[in-house]
Length: 181
Image 1: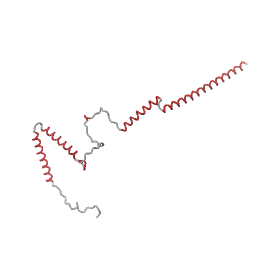
Image 2: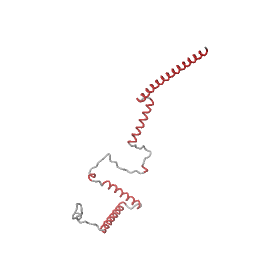
Image 3: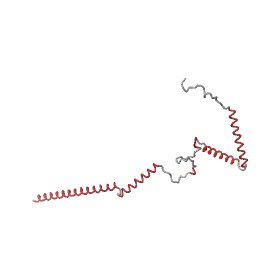
Image 4: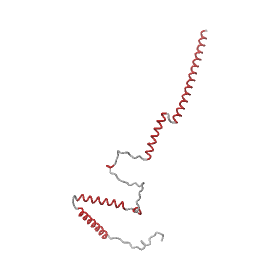
């Protein structure tokens, strides 16, 4: 027979099953104890007031106990050593009435960095327009050189045009002189 096959159960231990009658008896015993405890608590507090209120208070007491039991039940060594972990976040549920929608919202790291980047870009553009950045100074120097070149080109063009006009006028004078003869 291959490994892991069944050879006969749980190593010789006999299995024990609880009968339904035993389960019912245990449940009835627990209910009986709960009733007796409630009667003792009512007797010590005094039965004044609405039974509904008392029932609600008992329900709330039970829910508080459940919460405490949940917090007290810890795994392993957790119950022996109190650890204060600053990174551990205890989740608390808030009701809608407790939420503060008007207050300042905390931004994520990416959102903060994006806003800082936009502000830095705006600051740089203002300084650039004012001519205070190195790039703006280089642009202005380049612009000045280009303006000078354009002025020189315009001056040369004007001189050439004047020279042409004078040549054309001289040509007309010669023509008119030759016609007069």
